[in-house]
Image 1 (tube, rainbow, N blue to C red):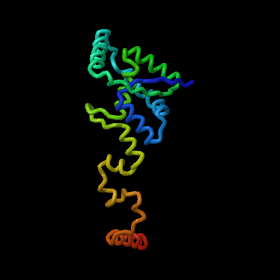
Image 2 (tube, rainbow, N blue to C red):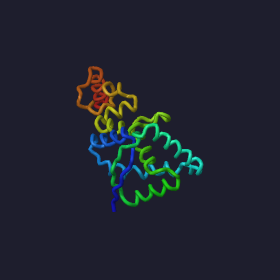
Image 3 (cartoon, helix red, strand yellow):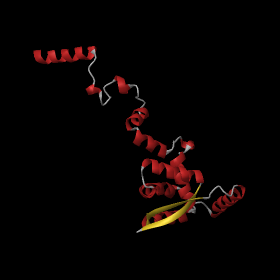
Image 4 (tube, one colour):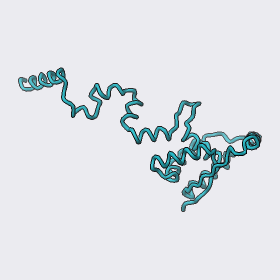
Length: 179
């Protein structure tokens, strides 16, 4: 059974997430259904905050809401499998994390990355990988120069050999014939 729920997110994160999903041609619900179980492992690894820590976080959120009441107004409807949503609700309750904060942190990470650990936006990386797969691979391996000059180019076999390469091929053929 699938359950539709609404989460409150930072407006920019919600907008960028929806736009990225449309650009990639991927259902936001299917994407979240596939990736959220893995994200729960990170939440599970966090220590449970004390009651005092949770109260302090609540106070910070209340003050932030008074300063900028429009900061968390974007609503995003999602549909997830009931077992996954139950796992998320249970884990958030155990860790004393509001469910909207969990979703907000995850979607914020997807669209913005994490500067503290030097991680660029995963959605930007996925977009690049899906639209320019070879370029992404070669750039990530820092071998872009090798694409056109070495045999690692997958289209190399369609190119005419250079004079030096032709000479080497002829010498190899001659050695095989005479041996």
